[in-house]
Image: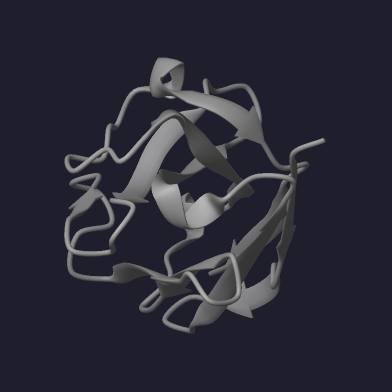
Length: 127
């Protein structure tokens, strides 16, 4: 059974930083692109960042480009999201997800490209 477990969320002041982690099991995660999405209250889940299976290609939403960095450690089946200069509008539940097909070299920003999701971790940024 595939499982993704996010951690690292919390409450932070605007301008602060957080590192989210997503640990996977039940699949050879090193073969799959991984993504981070977020959902704020009353809004649809939106793309944040994604990384290819090798880690050689990354993709970011315009709203986080230059502030967030996605990385992965395939020896630990873990993907990370470093979030700097956080803003109140970054407040949301953050979800990690694993791509539905292996060996993707161009990570997708579409929810439909991901088949397993974590339970989410809350990030709250106060002004």
